[in-house]
Length: 549
Image (tube, rainbow, N blue to C red; front, side):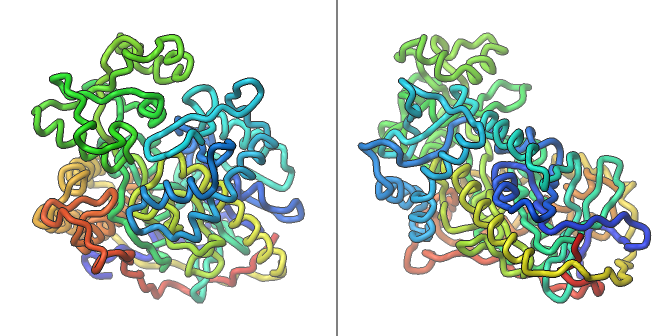
């Protein structure tokens, strides 16, 4: 292992000292993509779902806005496709976009069948606007708590399926491979006790890495575990330079950051700087309803121009009763700081929100690593391009989760159960991580990423950031940690290097990636993906992929 090369596995292990579990399909992640994958499997298979905390604490549960789908007579699939392509700034796969947009209404119907209760008007699904959308096509629930309601319905439905088992509070430590195939995973519980899960097919649905930034809308569990594990195992990743910053995060110094949904601007809220100027009118013809990348950069520049730590959302011109009825969760969050969303200016600033790059998958959710499938934010499917259109994330998780569940089930049903687990070991000795202040390194990493790999970047800063991350990697990766904090730090360092390398490579500005030293979009050279280097490994001999129940 070289100074800046991550070890193949985060920890040493020997199967004689570990508990073994066998499954037909292993799903790593319990958000919308993971549960939809599990629900697409037939009852003759044993399916095991791994939740890092509880299924209710995934990023999917935190989603406010809703799910995009062309459901009204005034709208069309073609409109949804066009809006997605415009937002993606030249890097979307048009066929993928068309397939996902076409599948969206059916997936929404499935959620209703699972027991999800969306908001309705006169018995029909209520639809709203969001930034970047040309028509009202966002279905929502509980006003501004769509993710919580969607996950409530899906979790309840999943727990009623006798062939599905959900393991709570388990962290993915590593993917296990043999002869270039994924054969399962090494996981650990909250006490650090490890289990080897052998699976005929594995579905990675572990979400993104938003917690690599200090200012983030993400759940604390979003630490890039799946992306880092896939990279160590030899999976292909790409476009890690594209990180979407949500324009409007409640900013009150000293408080946790609360998302202020895209739908607030969709309903007609204005953005004003500290002097009261509605600055978005001069930035884009769509003003506050422009795509997230444009709005986030405009806010960033307004903050720099006024030397003020935030801008303000203004809903005072809207009907107060409608505002409180439409956004009850946001109203509650603001009330904690004596702010009335209908009568007060709401302080907001951008925060890291969504990882657009990730593990490359084909249209069925297959990765380049046989036996490994992937769905949701952990992936780069071609849907989002260089910038995700609002409310396209949950539908991507549903569509690709379904495809992964169906495809993995077919493969698992084809494979026999009569494989044995031969002796294996991971013997690489490393120093103990006990003498490192993991929290201090993590805080430093998050600050560095915000300064140098944030809404605006430039080459010199990126070079310095890479050198600093390499320095940390040099002494973090030669240590073996015994628990979650150290493993998460190791994963975030791996992801940070990929993000910085991608940002350095892409010498242009496109979508969420803005280079001050290359401020123009360059289609001739850069209308393409940036592939991460594939990590070649020569780990220990491991057992075949078809170990069954």
